[in-house]
Image 1: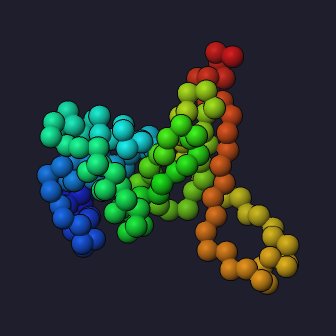
Image 2: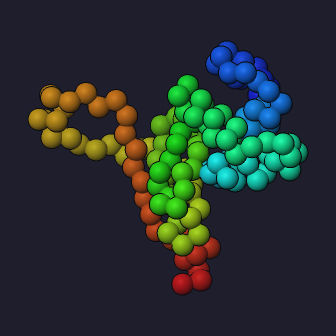
Length: 136
């Protein structure tokens, strides 16, 4: 298994112990955490960690294409270390976000496909997760 340090060594980021802890927290994380979530968890091990360090690290990872910045939660930005093609579902009650495989193809009008070059797409679904659906 590739270590976090080996995975991010070639990005040109200074790999401080705090930054490595942030990268380790994100590695394989499916919870789509906010910067505040990351800060609260990682600062337990590194009390001197600042929220600014978390934001700086997330910004650098976003610029390098190693994390997606999600704006589907109107209350806060969330971050997704899974950068492969996929969509998201957000529960409108508990705000839980889950990954949805991107299997749907949209049939674009010919005028769009001739005049525009689509580079990426993302579909967002919203509704109630199984837990929230059961309490309604």
